[in-house]
Image (cartoon, rainbow, N blue to C red; front, side, top):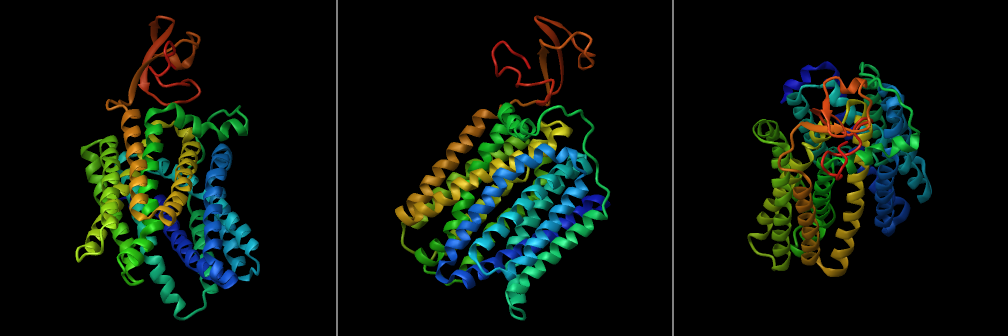
Length: 453
C-alpha cells in the first residue's frame, strides 16, 4: 500500500493531510477544556452547540465552494484555507466569551468544508490508476483512524508539561506546516471546460449529480447507514460503558479504540479485496452488517452486566468500525466512476455536505433517544435506520452496473462532435460510452420513460 507514496505530489499532499489532522485532534481536546473554563458545568452545552455549528458549516458551505472551486487554483485555495484555520486556532486561547468561541469555530469549520472536498477532488487526478487511487483512499481512512486514536494520547502528553491553551498553538503549527507543503507542491489545474452556468446552478450541480445517478443515490443511502451506526458509537459509548457496564473512565477510549482498530484493519485489507470484487458487493454487505451489529448491541444493553459483556462490546465495536470503513473507503471510487473530471469538485463537495447532513440527523437522535427512551430502544431504532438505508441502497444500485451504457440522443444535431461514433436510431442518434451525467447527458438511461438522456 505504501508504494503509492512514491508519487512525490501525493506524498506531500498526504503528509499535509496527516499534519493537519493531528492539529485538528489537538484542537478538539483543547476546545473541550476551553469550554469548561468558560462555562463550567455548562461546557457540554457549549460543545454541543459547537458540534452543531461544525455540521451546519459542512452542510451549507461545501456546495457553494464546489460551484467555484474550478475557477480558483487549487493550491491557492487549499493554502488559503489552511492559513484561515491557523488564524482561528491562534485566536481561540484569547477569547473571553462563549459567542466568540462559536464564531471562531464556524470560521475554522467553514475553512475545513472548503479544504477537504478540494483535497478529495485533487487526489484522483494525481493518481489516475485505479489501483493507486484505491490505496490512497485506504491510507486516508487509516490516517483519520490513527488521528482519533493518537491525538488524545499526544494531547495528554503535552498537557503534562504545558497548559491547555498551548494546544491551540500546536493546532496552528499543524495547519501552517500543511500550507507550506501545499505551496511546495505542483497541483493539476481544473479540467478545461467552458462554464456558462451561474454560481447558484453550479452550487446545485453536485446534488443534481447525486439525484440523477443511481449509484450515487445509493452512496448517500449507505452514508446514512454509516451515520446511524457511527452515531451510536460516538454518542452512546460513554453511557454504555460507564453507566450500563459500570466500567472505569479509562474503558471509554478503549472501546472507541476497538472501533478505530476495526476500521484500520479493514482499510488495510480493502485494496486487495477490491481487486477481486466490486465496490457494490463490498459496500452493501458491510452496510447490512451494521443493523446486525446494532441489534447485538441492543441485546447487550438489555441484559445486565456479565463477565462476557465487556469483550462482547469490544468485538461489536470493532465489527462496526470494520463495516463503516468498508462502506466509506470505496466511496471515492464510486464518485470518480460516476463523474466527469470537470465536475469532481462539485461531486465531492456534494458528498461531503450530504453525508454530514446524515450525521446531523443521527447525532441528536442517538443522544435524545438514549436520554429519553433508554439505550436498548435507541440501538434498535438506529439499527432500523441502518437497515432501511442499506435496503434502499440495494434497491437503487443496479446489480448489473456497467461503465459503458448504450443511449439515444434525441436533441443533438447530427453534426455535433459528441455524435462522431453514433448511428441513427428512432427519434435520435444511438451510441455507447462510459456514461456520466454532464451537459450532454441529463438523465440516466431507462429511468425516464420515453427519454434516453
